[in-house]
Length: 141
Figure 1 (spheres, one colour):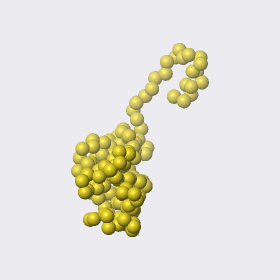
Figure 2: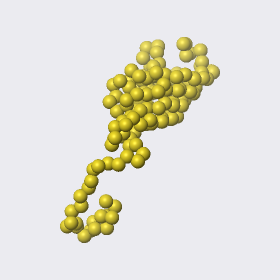
Figure 3: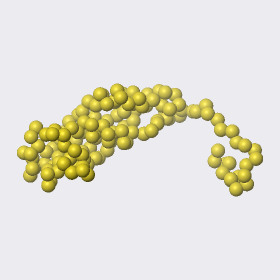
Figure 4: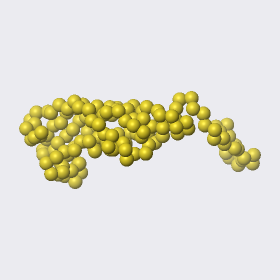
């Protein structure tokens, strides 16, 4: 699509993306639903500005039970493409939103998930001879 046709008009975006090729490279995510992308693109001063809402569900293993846990991602993002060093680069005549959207999903993905009600078998042991300055902190263990 020629984006230069939209210099004075916003281009509305409403699409779903299949980002499975990126999921295969991430060991923390077992699977991912299609990503819904909605928003608009506008052109200002030779900058392509994308205001988008991305929604998807990631499935990650529970840190304790290893059961698959769904993780909802719903974020508003603004990405700017131009030939400036401060913005995302335009590769030739193409703007690839897939990779940029994937990076935003990774930025909002939790480090780990725990199933509700999962109990860890890890136990902490408390030393008997505790520094008096830290004595009050024992009640938090």
